[in-house]
Length: 139
Length: 336
Image (tube, rainbow over all chains, first blue to last red):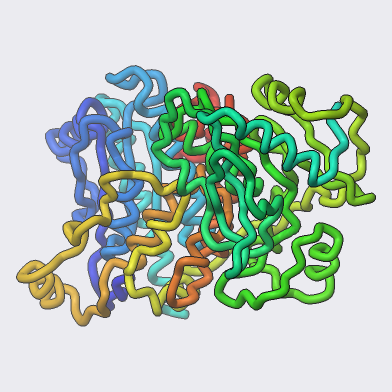
């Protein structure tokens, strides 16, 4: 795993569904809401397009955190894509727990109109990881 | 539960009778001059061995992409091999139509790496052998299902060293009814009991990096894994890691780099990929030239991930693999 560089800005990779969460992030921009600049969003056609291999690769290559964001369960454009996402990400989270990497991966549901919720979720994740990194540096 | 009480010669007679048909095959173990190994028998059995105390490869590896049309195959293998076969069937890599899978109670195995001759093949002697020394493979000592309770039928050993053949499905019943003898009640106590649960697997990234430090990326673990079946593996070739100019750009950007690169990536992705289908047979560790404790990680992670969905790989034919199914109301704790 890539070593942490000191004073490096946090980098969070986000996979956002193009039908809802990505729209929410665009709306957050047009409403001039601010979320941390270390958050890099990748647009995917559906949250279930996210192969857990993408997430593992992002983490191994040095990302501090990864989030997957999709439509609320039942609202998927492709009817049931996000139910599969939930199973896959839940299992990947369990695997990260086994490797003591809690909190590095998050899954949340944001619809196209919930720009505020998107900003809240992303910033709380950013702050949480930042706090943890600071603690580790102190220790 | 009803079954038939048998001796080893009864089973050999039944198999020989099965092989009378020229379109029938038996996949089991053969005693050779260099130990016991897998063998597919045609026409007649020759130096047949019911159990194999040395683990070389997982037999399900050889039934992959088996779409036998008109050829009946009888698998007489260890429980872990039958479980891998069941998983491969779920992954549509095997046509179940003409296959009868029979799992045989397993007492544990030795690694073929430190196999020394004169391992007893008699059931009682082998049980004593393993009781008296701890040469059993780690994967086998941690095995969660050594009982022959999977597949179409099972061969179980009772405490008086009798063999019992017990059908579990219609197909198994068809085979068992051709064996001589009457159905009797199976004793409740068998030689091999249900194994108790072990604690949850927990490591840190640091120990993981240390354990996998010596990996040379030969990918033998992937090639020997019975359930790692993808024809086009993402790790074929070197497209998944930076190379040439991109590699040097990356080093300039992020700092010194240890080579071969991507070994943690490879193992973590593979670990996730086989998590629901891993049967914990330890074939990966057996194939590893560097002696990396792969089973500890793959088995540990897969057991944790399977427990999440109360699933056990290869246990039942009718349970779908968790990643390809869902329930609407579940896993609320996974959402943030």
